[in-house]
Length: 81
Image (tube, rainbow, N blue to C red; front, side, top):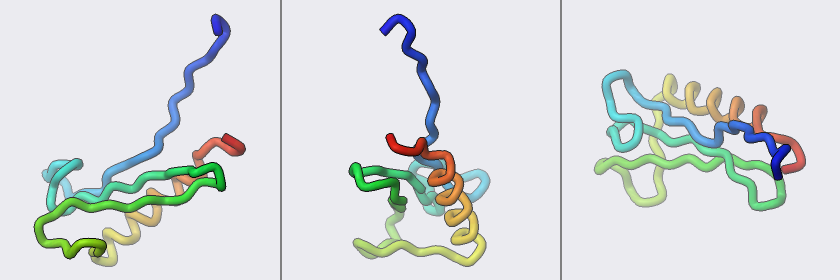
């Protein structure tokens, strides 16, 4: 274990409007990569009082940012891990 190397792997990001809290702000969308041993997949979540349970809402600009973040996370995910 003495030769073990620590790596940094980004597994989640927040897409939100400038000036809003990235964790619980009304515009915040969490984009995360997950892996249940069958390969990586994206998990999206939002926390807002205006949401209906099980529903995510995006305007076009936000959807493009969320999609770009999801692709970056998948592309950076270590293969075969």
